[in-house]
Length: 193
Image 1 (cartoon, rainbow, N blue to C red):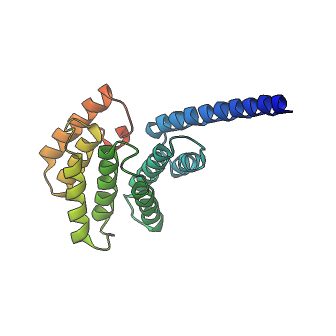
Image 2 (cartoon, helix red, strand yellow; image 1 turned 45 degrees about the horizontal axis):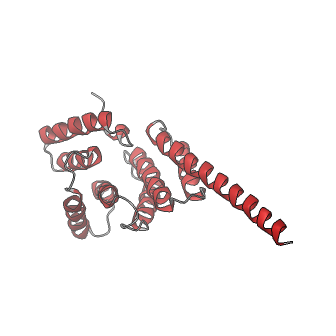
């Protein structure tokens, strides 16, 4: 009897490990898709994948869920409506739910900065003064790697907001080069000339 239970437990454990490996791979493959999708529906599908994926890297799944909603809101930012506000709020909710100790805190702070800047630029922030303070804090916390391409994107968008087009262009070029050498999401945020 004990031998049968032992064999059964090994079998169940191997199935669980196999399933976990599959979902971790699915998470990484879905993250790669962030640079190729370009419709609201595609971002919604990715968000659903990230939030429903059973993975050992739950903080990464939350991070990419927040990224997908941020990018959806960015797509909708040309005409900020209820869907834009909802997508931005969901992105913020998931970004805030990521424990800083479980993933790269710099990337999380950059994402929080991008989300905050996005809602500030739309004029829909409930407390713009606090939003500006939060944004400054996120940038300050992200400065440990000044070559991060998403930090360059955040700085470029901030420079655009303040009307400094030459600084924005410099930062976008820095981001473009950075994304070529260290790929990740963000290509769709760089204006095409």
